[in-house]
Length: 514
Picture 1 (cartoon, rainbow, N blue to C red):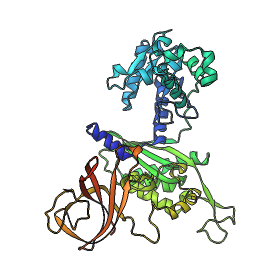
Picture 2: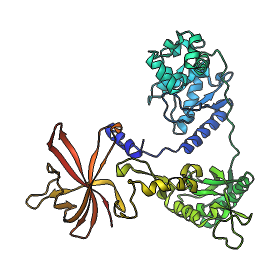
Picture 3: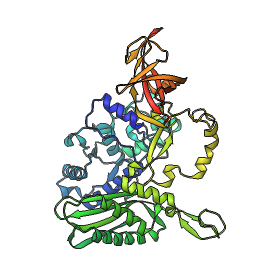
Picture 4: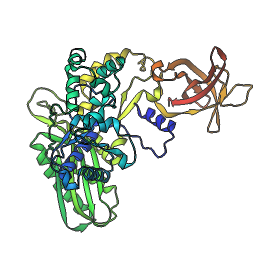
């Protein structure tokens, strides 16, 4: 869903102090890797990240790893038993600002089903843990929905049509008849959940560390000394990346202070870079923007996201434009546009320098999404020229976009939230709502009255029936007596079925053309 839809859900649920952020799949995986590493250090060395099938499982919209599998055979006694092991894991997650649903069972399949479908999404830690007694896996999962078996949505839908809603219903069916009708994959999931076959899991192995730490000879707040140490650490990190032909896309610098909590500087890059001077310069710029509350004792520079170094060939006589006339190469990260984006993102923040992507939603405020230009993998940002060319013809002739012959069809500035207008005709007073569908003669906003001298429209924009309650808007381009060009729309806010004359309308300002 879009961020706007998420905000609407929070408002409908009357949730306060909710922070809505765009989903970042790579950041999710980075955090999951970090949890897996800490689990290996503190709980058990046998920790694995769940393996996915080709397609998402039934009941799971996101096709990404979200669970950890831990083999605690032979180590539970170190924590005082299985309950103590769950307490230790809960404490670890809490220290990282996380909460999980934990289950212990004889088989991976049973533990997964219990953790995902039996344990409620409760805030209480004691309600988020479940231990299946040895040998009771079948009894523990019989009343759970079939989606707990990690099956395909099509399989779950077929079982639903057959009236098979729970795993217990499924277990009563002869397996000899399940395989030819629903596939051998469903039989394999049943066997895994009951522990009849082993489910191989790959133990997590952390990628090579791209991190360097330096303890200061004495705590200091001198910016020149700190900048010099950051340059040294960045050069060491760059050397490790260069051996693998990788470049940094996200870089962090942790400053451990003598008294106060540590500070972390984060930067993102438009393209993978292994230029130590460029990377350290971005970190130093961020350092200049903060105030150190106490002296720095230790510095740690880490690369949290990398990408392959992409190179382009330079021409023989002109180094400004890419050609195929020579074998010499240079990194895309060295281009002027890349360095400009990196510098702006470093000074203003990664989320302040964004690119736009069309979503296809008819509502103007939802017709686009913004994505940070720095700190993303190249493949995720759709920056390739091939992608742009593949849609060039569509954009040129699509009526959804402004055409060269009608450059004023869309405003140059779109308001994030449309502003309500007070409206009036020549012989009426101002009001917010009206029963007249015709274009008003006067508008009032922020206490200032404007008279419409010219207009173009209407242009109907409406949402599809599959997106919930229909939204119908009639947009007008208008010119006011103050030489302002606005984009306004009329929206029906109430209507009696079969009686269009009883409809109530509201006018809103949505954009400016100048």
